[in-house]
Structure formats: structure tokens, C-alpha cells
Length: 105
Image (cartoon, rainbow, N blue to C red; front, side, top):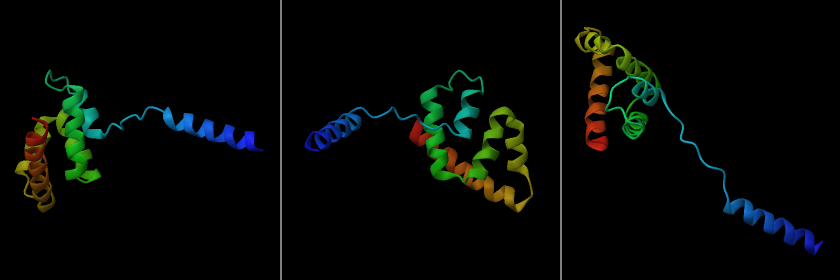
């Protein structure tokens, strides 16, 4: 019984010492950034922008903003829209953009 307990403790210690690699979850903004085809869209920059987006925007906002990478004209349409919801979104999006610029360079 003592051997069994020692064996379990050794296994638990070894298992804890060699954890499985943690993979960073990519989000919709990061995916859109990486697939945008822009030369400045490095994995590090896109990952940073995603991190700021997760802190600044709702999931729905991130889905909407990700579409801007494919269709920049859509951003212009939202910015110029008379809809109150678009105006509120644009304010959140601008704050996110300012924060991302400061955080990610």
C-alpha cells in the first residue's frame, strides 16, 4: 500500500511538472486580421488586437468589427449611419481602436 501511494505521488508530481502546452484561443478579430492580407498584420499584432478587443467589445461587436477587415467600406457605412445603434457601436469601436493603437503599437 505504501508503494502504491508513493507511486501515485511520483506520477502526480511528474504529471504536474510537464503540463500540456496551452494553446491560445484565436478569436474572430485575430482571424480576420491574419487573413486580411496586409503586410503589417503579423501574428503578434493580430493577437494583441484580439486581446484588446476581448476587453473592449462585446462578442457581437467583435463579429461586426471583424467584417471591416474584409470590407473596409462597411466601416464607413456604419460610421455615417443615422441609426442610434450604429452610433453607439461606433463610439465603442473608436475607443477600442484608440486602446489597441496605444497597447499594440
